[in-house]
Amino acid sequence: MKRIESVKNPLVKKVKRLYKKKQREKDGLFVIEGFHLLAEALQYDVEIQEIFLQEEKEIPEDIHIPGITLTLVSSQVLKEMSMTETPQGVLAVCKLPKEQPVTILESDCYLFVDGVQDPGNLGTMIRTADAAGVSAVVLGDGTVDPFNDKVMRSAQGSQFHLPVIKGNLEDWIQACKQKGVPVLGSALDQEKGTTHTAIEVQDGFALIVGNEGAGVQASWLELSDQVIYVPIYGQAESLNVAVATGVLLYHLKKP
Image 1 (tube, one colour):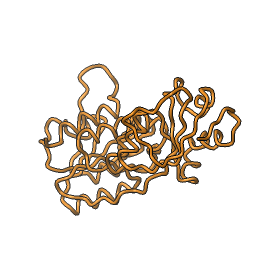
Image 2 (cartoon, helix red, strand yellow):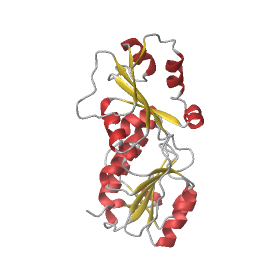
Image 3 (cartoon, helix red, strand yellow):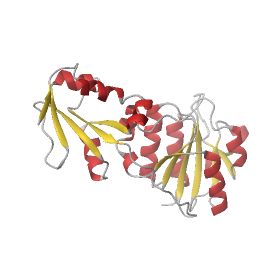
Image 4 (cartoon, helix red, strand yellow):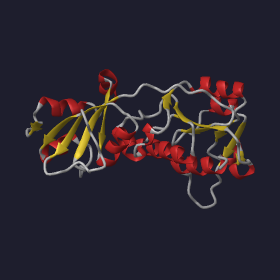
């Protein structure tokens, strides 16, 4: 078993570089932190290259890691490797998964994300889509990388449960139309659409949600079969995009 005690160890620096998108794409690797994400990755066959365990910490009995390199590190080293203020005692370097092929089906539900830039928002949206039984999440241009460390922590492993794909939203919108899947664009205000409560539960649908400030771009709304919005009853200027996504998914999704 290897052991790292110095924060200047080259391997420490290599792990830290993986918090940058360009380095993740170059190396084909990403980092997960915490025992829950480690367990999720193992359960869903994510290829783990190496696990770094803080000394005096123990791997829970229900987490089995046969054949994976385990390296012990000091608390100082783990803190240096981690992006959290209070590391949980374990992190792992994993290979970026290959994008799963998705076949659009009339009875399935999809979430299309247009330019959402906040990692916490995207992670929450992926987790919510997972909980709501969405078949796939498609990330359009300008959307934050799903393997960003903050996205990973917010999604809590849901990236491993369903396909999360980077793609051209126009291609996906047209593909849904060809398959008879209703495309529902979400608007920021009532001037551009219909309240979501006026829309009945759907057997299948594709919901488009957009950037925190600008919303869904006009070209995608024009391609939508229906534009909907979540009404604001109080004095808030707007509703958080992750919250709005949850409201819409759970309203539209057929149990």
